[in-house]
Length: 306
Image 1 (cartoon, rainbow, N blue to C red):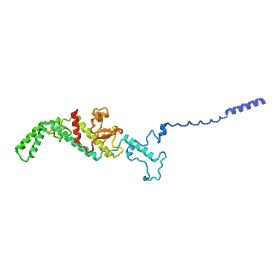
Image 2: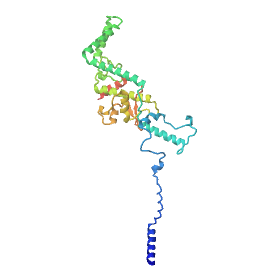
Image 3: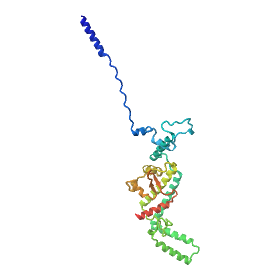
């Protein structure tokens, strides 16, 4: 009986030993983090989601700057980098943002509106002059009116010498070789000496090219004036359609000019616009006060070379 009790006691102790919980294992130490060279060079966090919407950021680019005590701060602490390095970093970031961000709130100013209205009126007058010259009846009527006006300006009617001079002038006018005249130097673009305007032979493509060159000229100068940001005097190819629509209320596409690449389009307007190396900004080649006649003369010269 005692043997059985001893066996039972030993079995109970073994069962308790088996049920005793194991001691928790020591936690493994984390591996030491190794930073890449790119991560070591990173001085600020780059989040996948922007902190500020692009549209809101675009409206504030011109006002962004480093804080200063002049604004009322008691203390300004540069924890990661010194003030000079931080200012440089912000400056570089701003310049890059201004190259790639559109000025969404930009609106045409008074300078542009005045010249745009003037150009619309001038274009209508030139198109009217061309139509009148091509219409035989209107051309004859216009020539007779000019002769009548000239006669009224004569001091002495019936003067033989004046009569001979007038006849000689009319003969010379009839013999004017228009194609031999230099479009860039003719005195009067509305009358080359025989009543013919310099643009008498303009076709649809010539008027389109003239209008486009003047539009780009006005747009580039107006953009600089209206934005008034020394860091962003112009814009690149990718923003041209946006600003063109904003200023002229119509779409822009290089396909309209039969061009597959932007470089091909620039060749068509190379007398007034170029692309700056490095920045890629479009640059107006003529001064802001260039006369509309200057553009027309160049288009006529290009037409004759085609």
